[in-house]
Length: 457
Image (cartoon, one colour):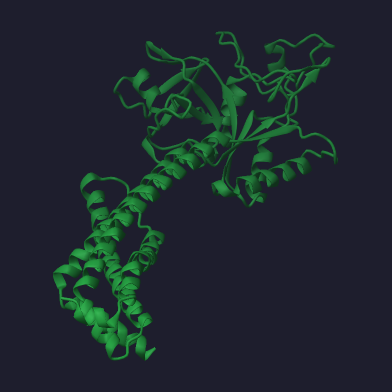
């Protein structure tokens, strides 16, 4: 150990005799490591920004859909059966640890009317306040969201997206105003922040959210077995009622009651189905576990026997997850290629300068060999010099790279993120470059003949 420390001191004295050359020797490594650190931090910040954007569109989102109903050998497709309830949603939130949040969805479609203007939104959802957390949409541009009390009371309130505000209100604030949906007036409580188009090109801001009980009981007809949920016909004499509780078969055994008869003879509520349950997993990695937990819980709640098919379907956003993974992989590979090129250039510079140093110090090498130094001692000395140069250059490069990253964040306002892995890897790579590219000059110095070295002019 003492011998090794003496060789380090000797190498440092040798580098100190020519500071300018040592600085020029380190310059390639400094630039290479600085470029790696800056690009890794900018790239990691961009990756996280992309991840947040895709996450807001549903990369961690799961959809639970009812099963398919069939009649006479004809299947009516996914979502045509009545198998999901709001109690299922509450149970999933409560008993599935890998589910961060869940909300029910009741869909409808109709025309919105405000004054003498009208608009047909892409999406009208009846849901509960947790939907905004599932979609990471908690921050409101104006006003406030509806509450769980509004859901329990079936209050006629809603929040609207930016497209609805632009098309119906044309610059006015919609908060506190009323819009009409199927002859029912809804008070606008708030305006959602803009999300823009999703990956499929659909406008996410063309949306209306209202309490699901209001949409279910006041706007939509109950869904019948074998049919998907459809909106009630918008007629002036329609009666909104709570009595349409049980699905009817395809072949009616008894005459259908009129809307007025149903309103006059309400039946007790047995259960209320919902169209979908939307869930957010805690992370993208926990999605498979969350799906297993949801499947096990719903099978138990729906009393399905072993071997019996599920009466529901779970869908995950596979395409969004694949997009995120491919984007991150592409950026990582690009940065690795650039880092490799930069470090190879810096390593070649180290090799060239070390070869010049060996040539200039030939007599010194011969003198050390003449007084007892062996070839491995000379080899180790020059390797130590190369590693110290690269290590010092790596530390300077880390500082320069961090400075460039901070400058980019403050001046250009690009997202950046500190990469501790890149910093640690830079130190390791600096030492490796010193060993790899310093080995040949050191080996060449160790192979010199002492007599020829002493005669060298």
